[in-house]
Length: 76
Image (cartoon, rainbow, N blue to C red):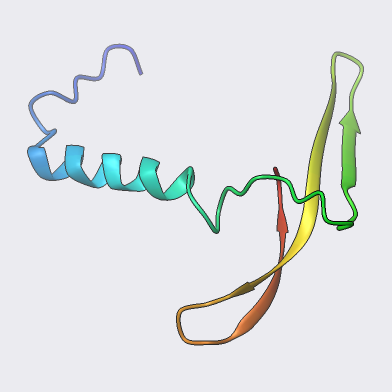
């Protein structure tokens, strides 16, 4: 991958799309602050012989732009 050059193919449209994607990934409803209103936290863990990992998340009800209510598992 280090030998692959993107510069000849990368345009201003690619940059704008990448910036837009980053903004969406770090804003609601994808990324939300934890809620301390009594909503339970869920701890998910995984391990192998070399490492151990954990993710803290909460189930949050979200309303989509069309008005449909969905329950999502959010990671604070």
